[in-house]
Figure 1 (cartoon, helix red, strand yellow):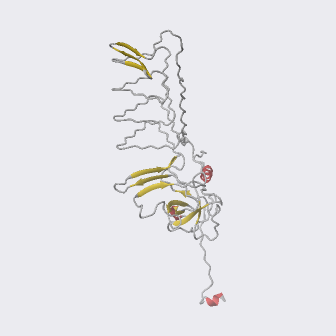
Figure 2 (cartoon, rainbow, N blue to C red; figure 1 turned 180 degrees about the vertical axis):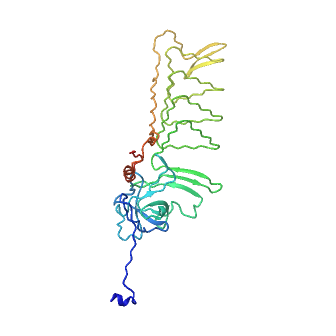
Figure 3 (cartoon, one colour; figure 1 turned 30 degrees about the horizontal axis):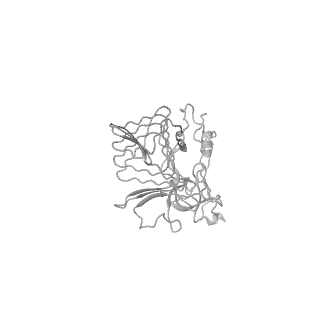
Length: 346
């Protein structure tokens, strides 16, 4: 029957094949792999009860809108890397996308198995921190307290005549400067502390006020000087105490007045001036008994010491030895799978 249908020609069969050397390992040709033409939108997801979910490398899990089978949890995708503003060995910038954030996902060389988060976007649910366009002149970084209410913020206002740098800390603000701090304020400086201020200077403290200085202490004031204390006034020293002034010296007290020295109690007084010594009182007693008065004595308190700031050690990067042996291919594949930075030679 085949011969009849072939138009009189005999039935033929043809074939072609290629051969490889017997010592070579044969592998099938790479089949066509689907490509992703451009970036896509996804939502950061994670397990129930979490707000931030990542692995040791800062990777996150994603839910794509076209994924009908994804449950929007930690099983919705593989771990996906996140592009950061700066990334080095234990230094750089990092901001982990949180659960519910909308992100832009690109694919390296269009490979759907190599997704990477390259951007983040606001939308109707996740709105910008301030109303726009009313606050379009503001550039800011605002975070949100994890598992709580509050935020930290660094804000720059660029409106002409209203330029401002604003810092808000929900709890503490700590700074560690390894050398000098220099401030130059060309106008006023205002500081208000609702609780205590504790300051410690381990060397010298210098203060120069070129005009007037006023201090008001509503409680007690304690001043402790382990060595000497020197005071020099260009005009007068005026001291007023509501009840008592007590001066005590371990060795001597010297009052040196150039013109006059007066001790006054009620209507009695002793005045010493260049003309002589004047004693005035209802009666003058000399070696007639009695006892001297006494004062309250010193009862000041030493100041408290300030708290400490966490000292963060500089990054210690692994030293990569020079390559002395050929690279072990199985070791390389295993290191890539485990995320290791070092591999061994053969």
